[in-house]
Length: 287
Image (cartoon, rainbow, N blue to C red):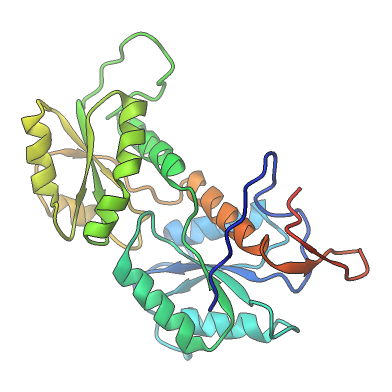
C-alpha cells in the first residue's frame, strides 16, 4: 500500500491519458456498506460514467465491508483479481478511491485494513482538490429541489424557499470540519449563510439548525454532503428538524470528475510504458 507522491499541476491536462498500457493500475471505487448496490445506485452509475469517459481504464466498484474473498464484490477479492491480471507484480495493481464526499476516518480505517489484508500493492487516495466541485454539486442539488437559485450570475433577485443552508456530513467531527471550506464556497455561490453539521457527532444537525436560526434564518434547507452509500435521505428525515432537504450528491458528474482527477494524479507518479512506443517508460503522460 503506497500513497501517491505530490506533483505540481499543469494547465490544459487531461485527467486521464487517452491511451494506457496494459500495466496501468485499475481504478477501484471502494464503497462503504455491506449492502451497497454496486450494479445500480450511485456506485453503479458512477462506475458506468467512468468507464464511458475513460475507456482505457479498468474501472471497478467494490464493497469495503463485503463478505471476504468468497464474495466477488468484496474489496479484497477485487484487489486479488486485479493483481492476478498484472504481469508486473512490483507495480501497483490498482488505485483505490473511497466513494465518500468528505473525510470519514472510520471508513478510511476499514478501507486501509482491507487493502492491507489483501496483500496486494495498491495506491489508496481520497479525492484531490474537491471543495469547489463538491460545492457546485451541492448547489445543483439544492436548485433541483427548488431550494436555491440555479443562476448565480444574474443580477436580479430570484425568490427561493430557503434563506440559509446547513451542510450535513457523515464521518464524525473530522468530516464536518473538512467541509467548512465547502460551506464557505457554497455561501459565496448562494449569497446565503451556510454552515456545516454532522449527522453522527457534534456539531449536530440540531445544533447547526439552532445556530442558523440565531443568525436570522427562518427558512432552512439541508444539503446532504454525502454520495449515498454511507448514509441515506431517510437518515436525515429521522432527525426531524422540520427543514426541507435536497437530494444527496449521488452520482453527480462532479464525483466522476473527481475520481478521474484523483486516478490521473496517482498514475502520473508511476513509470508507465507508452503504448506503441516500444515499451519506453515515461512519467505522467497526461497531455
